[in-house]
Length: 167
Image (cartoon, rainbow, N blue to C red):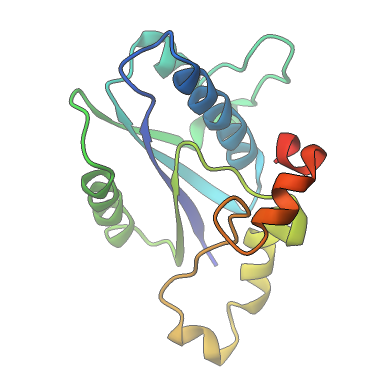
């Protein structure tokens, strides 16, 4: 079973804002995880209005981090746009890329999303591979992971600072 990740990425216009720094931090964590995850064969990023420094974040890691291998760097495909787009337009670009590929599964992700460590979030790729041959899976066109900030776990998420700060 072949899997790829597809990320819509716009980091914002104000490179000095707190929101920009937060999105960039999440995006770095997201890329580091996806590029080192062996089951994910390719990571496509619809990169909107990236400057040179943002382009390079895909090939080098922050200071103090483990450098990505050349194999991991080769997994990344940047699809660039010099204009900010509505996320739906970016998803459509990535959907076309997915539909023209030979991947069995495509994981569509916003650049400020990271996998939730609890409830087996980081095992989603492995678990999907385990159940892919189940005949019932042919009825699955998509799924939505638990997002504790938006789902029934909100009270637990807000009460547990350690979980919140490390997710």
